[in-house]
Image (cartoon, rainbow, N blue to C red; front, side, top):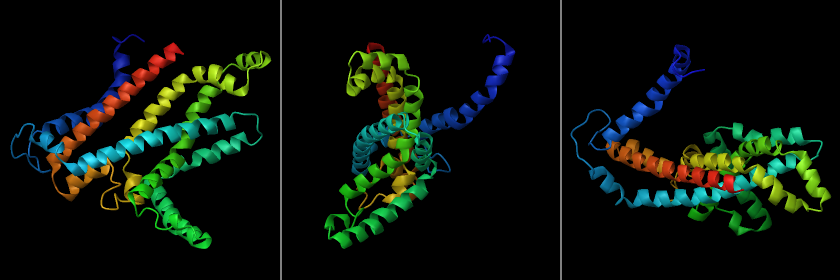
Length: 286
């Protein structure tokens, strides 16, 4: 269909309207408000880059940003590792593969808040019970320290998203020509060699998509952070999304929170686009 046809723009108009109303216009307003002393109701005046300069002096925001970066890096590695491993399992010649696909994907259907409360019960009650039963003190008091809170969030996120990422890897793994695998097997290639030199290059686009999704989802995490640790202890497990929400609605500093949100948006967009560019380049090389 040619772009100059009226029917083309008629079909496209609802999508463009929704995108403008939900994303583009609020983003532009948000950028404008970040340069003012907006209190959520009215704009008192234009103050320039004052909010942005204060962000880089805000220790709590910088700490939450560093915690989010660490959490994102570890989560991306684990989610993609487990997602690919599960995909390889369910695409192998086992009778229960369809049943396993359903089971592995089910955690992704549970809402973030509910999931956080479920795992909070597991970490606090179940771990403590097991620790007392077997005399393992390290299992008692989970989520009470920064380290256990960090790994609690990583475990929760990996458990939830691994099945979703598995589906993406499955779609590409099932597109790998069986003739290539059989030919390599006849030539004496081991299973690891077939995986490394045939399967991985052919499913390279799946790595690009999966890394983009895991990166954006883990960076913007809020629901699970709220219900699992609520940022505790002493805001040491507070991620950026929660810190911005706290600034806006807890401290009623709307314009300042908007400046933080704009900076956060730029960071996530820059990292995501860089990751996509690098992975796309690797796809061509492979």
